[in-house]
Length: 230
Ligand SMILES: C[S@@+](CC[C@H](N)C(=O)[O-])C[C@H]1O[C@@H](n2cnc3c(N)ncnc32)[C@H](O)[C@@H]1O
Image (cartoon, rainbow, N blue to C red; front, top):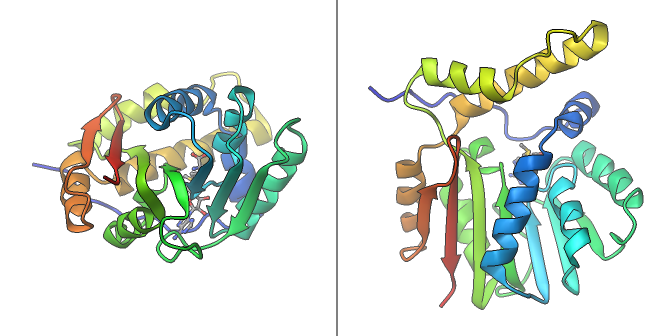
């Protein structure tokens, strides 16, 4: 029997959450996200990142060159404050704008962006259909969406196994470091429980009108949705 979804809070809006999140090492998954999104988008003039958090994904784009317009939105001021610090510490990131906003009610005109992406946001949302509709609305004709997130495993045992594999507390961690690793482990565990399955994402994307979108598992714990606004 499938594991029931256990939602987690939508926003991550305390300084501790922002700090813990920013100090988690997502460099490998972020690099893969940037590689795959770039390959899917091709060269674009405008790019929107939704639920950008502390901005690590936009900042990972810098090395390969930025589009002319690059906007990154999050609803949590604490995450954006950290994103702004990270941006100032990244040479070449001046063109990225971090903006406060709700993923389900974006303050942009229809068709404003040639490419729209989002990583690790959907599991926070109670109503992903409204979010998918909104991403499609701001995506220009001929533009593309690239959305990736965790997938909820079939059982509590699989959640535990993935947590051990990807969020283990290092045996030699002490004191505050140990506490932080432990909080990060709980966060990852809760996120897997809050995640949607690939079938749920397919259904919600179809409700949102992304009928020709492709949703598939792209790692042992992630699904990826790609869609072209043709
Ligand atoms: C797990 S973090 C992912 C951050 C980033 N995309 C990354 O991959 O590192 C999820 C982010 O989504 C944001 N978020 C949650 N609900 C949101 C909403 N309705 N609108 C905009 N951002 C939201 C949270 O504040 C948090 O920063």
